[in-house]
Image 1 (tube, one colour):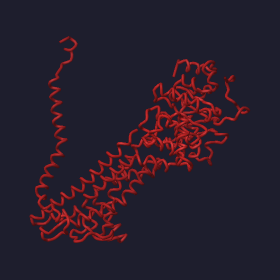
Image 2 (tube, helix red, strand yellow):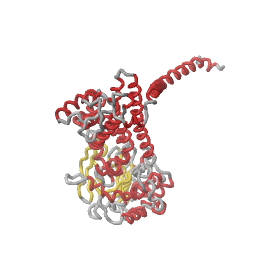
Image 3 (cartoon, helix red, strand yellow):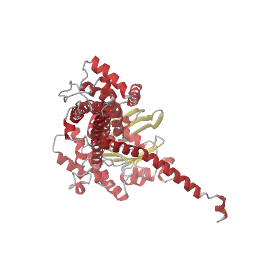
Image 4 (tube, helix red, strand yellow):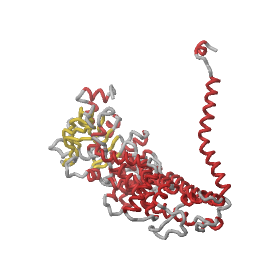
Length: 293
Length: 261
């Protein structure tokens, strides 16, 4: 070794060892979530798969496990999410467009922004209390699927707004400038160029926000969604139940068979969630192909 | 070709664009200070100067694109055919329809070639034969032959030089009287640059062109008039020939001979 090299003590083997150790620690951290989820899934499938069949999907709940099904809860969730989407999507996207494209920097807009960020972190039970006092009692909508959907809309609105703003912000400014320079008004610019370019990102965010609504239980219990419903809601003013509530109900029964039903219900719930997330990924993939700057 | 070093003043044809004591500030910093100049019709006027001298800001003052930056204040006058572009009753949307712009980096919309050209006319209420209008604009931008078979392809599939000509076609489709160009060739290779420069000569038959450029050879090649800006101040303005062969100011001479900038 030359004299120059000798000046620097080359403890390379030790440095390499530390690198390897950290590599393993980081890998474990990355695997922890996935492995736990896999174990959980395996357990749920082991318990529930034998209960999962067409009869389960098309029957109403019953005292007798063999006859009990998830139809009312599944349709309740469909109604709930459908109505939530109807309220939350236009309001959420509208608010995001206002904040990103129109709002100037002033105290009132800053206040709105801070509030939205805080609302995104508010516990869902708080939204339940809000829904109970405003929609169920004050507006007199009762314990209806409409009350539930309005409450869920409030819950997912901040997330929808934040995701939509991110998507709008990702649209390069050069596109806006190009449109303005052609004598377009702000709305024409947003409508024709900014919104279409941001739509994949917005839809992804919206679907993820709605997935959250599907899994939420606390606010629904708060506003009094029923646990035993032997019918499918036929209108927005009907009483309803939803998948997580039905699962919660079954899992708190003493009879062992109901655990199996709860597990089967979880599989259905996960199936719905996975389908929605897959849709989000598909939309993003499909529309990104023709969007390059 | 032009003898005097002053642009045509009142007496000759009235300038299409001019500014009087124009100052543009970002917050408290002046990017353009007290600039007065007249831009003659159907000629090419180049604005040159070192980076950060305010040449792009000056250009954007002419179609109110500075409005989009927060904290920008514009004082003095910017006149279009004698009308103050910053008057209270002037709608900036109308200004931008009449005074087109081409940007530094080609920025076609992520839509078809046809839609890129057609959109501006449609939103401004054009209800005639769109196909004819688009073809005419693409021909004037010397792009028709290259894209006539791919009008439905994305504008982003074209080469950089073609994209920039598409952006020029897009501006031309509105039949503006003035086209502002903000370093339109800085992102292009020499061959594409040459094509754009050739195009500028054709366009000046019909349009007034104001071009900001970093490239002094380009200014010398294409422009009839040259304004030299430094630190937001207009140092010298005159016929390009004179600016490049007999500059009146020492600073101009230093810049064009490459001593600074």
